[in-house]
Length: 370
Ligand code: SAH
Ligand code: SF4
Image (cartoon, rainbow, N blue to C red; front, side, top):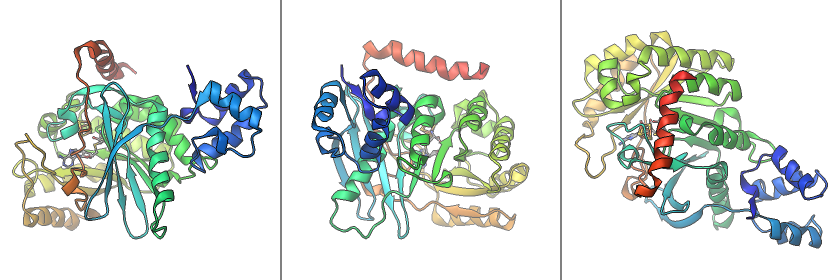
């Protein structure tokens, strides 16, 4: 089987070249061709000899996920549906703004955390994406900029791990891909522009601080454990207090003076009262934070509703009155089902894959003992 070089860190590429009796410095050349110049054909790597090009095409490949289709929203948001084999599809979304373009990347096919308000969670879980399938998403988005006629819009400036899946439950592949995103010899994004969002797996937040200092956002969504247990079931294992403590440790370890972003989805009549805002204000005194409110994005089959904009505004004002920088995430790409929590892809729930899935679930359970 051909080796896929797309998901290899520079060090691994070096080992690969040594293993095929080639000079190690070739790794740097290929790494740059793939990640900086977006090349997937060895024949286009002009600083490699013809012999080496053909040797590489026999032994290796640059395999990116297959684009099944792309959809453009009227607001400029773009969604890609990618096939990763065995009937599994994942989605990624590009949100262009005036001065930046944010790419929302998936980390798993489906999600086992199963938050009650999330379309991805409702799909169940199939498998983790590997490193090449994660970094491949950035590769594809960069390529799209190269192809477009209007070069005035910026290339991908920010990456958020907020697509399908819980990134911390696919730890090695996700952190490896983030490292590549921040590597100057690859995509060179600054650590402030690569963000991991988590539903709150406490031991893995501590583990994360050992390998990266990228930005972290916490999907809190409730001001107390009773409510959070209903919305984010993982809270039963890692209650709010432990989560905020772990987040504090992460920020301190990174020597980061920034405030942590707290994501708070607003669901009509569930967590959006002024009493909830008050409770949240008191709770977050423990952690320097800014709050990003996400009005619930509906999806077929969900019983929840988005609150009225008056209710959203009053919630925001209540937090601001208590001194919190509070923003409301404007919904983008809703017409193409590309808004937060609307990414469903296609999750292969085939019975023959049951074993794989239960192994993944066990990983989730065993994180408690890490
Ligand atoms: N699993 C990670 C990252 C992916 S979800 C996490 O939960 O943080 C990315 C964000 O979308 C999270 O803040 C999540 O809570 C939010 N989200 C999920 N479903 C949503 C919905 N239906 N409407 C609005 N936001 C949603
Ligand atoms: Fe998974 Fe995040 Fe959706 Fe919860 S909100 S089910 S953790 S993707």
